[in-house]
Image (cartoon, rainbow, N blue to C red; front, top):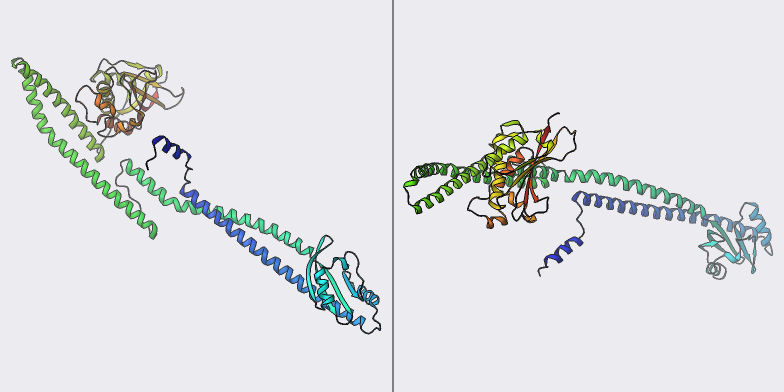
Length: 481
């Protein structure tokens, strides 16, 4: 289903922008670093916690068993057994956190290490089932390992072992692991930045090579590489560039050959027209009209052939500029004077009047003439030329603008870049008054201006009136007053 234009533009506006390749590589490496750091931290913490608890558990079992045997040794020789004396003897050895259960009573337990804080299921297992056991339980505000030993025919012995120091060690370990994870992630980001740059560097090289080819350096190639993945890109790019160079050279050679072949019959035809023009008074009226049409078409054909030859020189890289310094205002006035509309008014600002440009006189004059011819053909035939410098005073180099304004229908925004392409005439071509023009004039303007380090564009008139404003921007220097 085809989405209507307004809705498609709305959908495009809502679609999130795609991150660049470098950012995606960096994001992937960063997320990988975070995931790896988190996995290692969680695994290390879990193993350490398990080992610490296991060590404390084993130590608690061994210690409580030894103390339970001591209690049993103290109770058995007496008849009846004296549990109080046994607890006193145990306390004298430094053991404090314990409880002796004998004849439904407890001995030696000091709060909170008393019967109430022994887990019920552990107490039942040891006292009633006569099975030793252990359990982690909260006693007071501390976690303890409670170990119970059944003393056959006598009672039971319970001992408490706090493990808060294990929690303290684990807290320190947790902080250390968090810091290590942050450091690891930071190092991963740095590695990601380096890797992303290395990964996209071949793309940057290919982009620069493509820009060079687009700028006319058709012999640009990528260097060969030993990387098997990049070799495919390099070879494909070089093959494409070579094929493009061959095609452009073939097309340019064809255009040049055709143009040269056309010059001889054109010269003969022009000479014949001149002879007929010399005997114009002897011709009947219909013959004179035909002669005028023939003469006009011969002139147009000669201009087309010259434009084709100039384009061929651009493509072949055979253009050589004869650079001279000249007063910009005086040069433009002379170029307008020899154009097809010599009466075109030229308005020059005070600063532009004293500006100097450096360029090829013949080709810059051709630029001005082409813009005036374009205004005559498509812009209503009433062009005006203005020259200004918009940069603040005191700059060593300024931007001089030469604008040619007409009173036609203007240029649609979607055609403003198209009209500078070869053989493109835009929507105004259907409204022209004659048969002149083949869509090469503005293309030559763009080529010549770019060779002089400037740029050209088209916009609406600044006064709001209908029409187009073609602007040339060149570098200029101002004369010292």
